[in-house]
Amino acid sequence: MDILLARDHGQLELTPLVDGTAQPSERLGPAELPARVAALEGPDVRWVWADTRTVYPTLLAAGVRVGRAVDLRLCHPILRHSVWTRNSALARGPASRWDTAAAVVDDVPTLLDELGRPDDVPTAQLLAELRDQQLAVAGSEHPGRLRLLTAAESAGGLIAAEMRHVGMPFDVAAHDRRLTELLGPRPLPGGRPDKLERLVEQIRELLGAPGLNPDSQPALLRALRAAGVEVASTRRFELAAADHPVVPVLLQYKKLARLLAANGWAWADAWVRHGRFRPDYVPGGVVTGRWATVGGGALQLPKQIRAAVAADPGWRLVVADAAQLEPRVLAAMAGDAAMARASRGHDLYAGLVTEGVVGTRPQAKLAMLSALYGATAGEAGQLMPNLMRAYPAATGLVERAARDGERGQQVHTWLGRTSPPPGPRWHDGQQRANQPDAVDADERRARREARDWGRFTRNFVVQGSAAEWALCWLAAVRRDLTALAGSTTPDQRPDLVYFLHDEIMVHTPAELADPVAEIVRAGAAEAGRLMFGETGVEFAIELAVVGCYAEA
Image 1 (cartoon, helix red, strand yellow):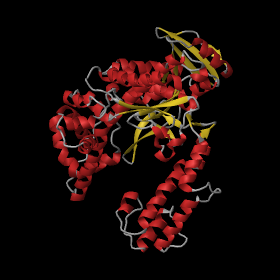
Image 2: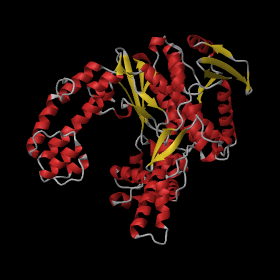
Image 3: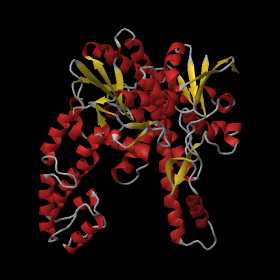
């Protein structure tokens, strides 16, 4: 049974749906909501609400979890922009408060909130949006896939809220010790740690630039050029190619300065509370469906500080990541039997060597990444013909996606998330190249921009489908962890505490580590079957049961 949870001018309404028909609503005050949801929650109940971010944290704070929910905000842009639903009323209607639309800013795909978050939504509007979404799915070219995608996306919303509520175990004292080892003792506000200050002094001396602030890119660039270091920017790869004694010192400074800025003491003060790291995850924050974060940098925890991610006494971390996920997803999407054979094992790249496609594992990795990202120069270009002969179905799929993108067409993932169209500037450039007065520069620019967009669409179909697989994996693991938690006390429940594209982490009592590990492994296999059926592709994972993240 679906139960709508709506908010109208501060009042909450619970409205059951029986065979799609709304039953009499029950009005509640905010303080009454958690207990009522807990009383109604059950395996046959699916909650429907506007936005998990604005509803679920309140329930979690009261100790209430739900098994299933429909997040209309997350599902709306998927169904509004999917090529499979383009003839639906949802897709053809005017923009509304529900639109978190795929957009392109300066020809770079991003997500923008066009009209604000749907928060205070009356029951009638909630019901109308739910019905519009259901009709869009039912009338689509592939309703089964879209139902799976919207269910997985909504589950992701629940998981993101739960992970923030639970938090990743984080040892602030261990973090401080590691920073002190790398940077020196914590400085006063506005100051630099000792090791950074000494590096700054060396940089100034080597460049003959007293008072230089190396954090100012224009000032640093001027000082480098004045010292005879001819570089166009201060990027690491460009500096590394320069021949000057300041280069290694400057590279070391930039590395440590980034650590301080991104994951230093101020970062821990802002994002670690009560021994838990609590970032704000953003499901679907990237157009491919990958997650993002708002602050906290949860998707970029560097190796230098991972020892601070430590299990509580008597607990363990089960850390797992999918091995070569995107190539395996590509093999399953394409139904490429030969590539499926190469996937049988924990190292698909070694499988390519065994199959005789390339000579070495580094070559296999380079060739596969070239197929996924469209690299054609150097050794990558030389290896691609081998890959195309060995796996015509898989390489043909990404090549077609690239050609579609070069023509300005949209592509879609396995479950139907659709790429944004290129922006007006892209189309203007293509049209300009076809004008009678176009010059060679116009044509070269148009070809370059077409190839760039083709590389984006080439990767979109695979990266987006891999993100869908990861959501299915997360949802399966969450479901089975919930079942396992039913045999424990609330303070002993294992929980998902981290997710990064193709990697998950569960914090679990030590005595449950083995069954949790089996749940994680089984979830990966289930995600593959759920999305693709029986393809012969093995979705292998690398798993470790450890005391801290650095050991994984």
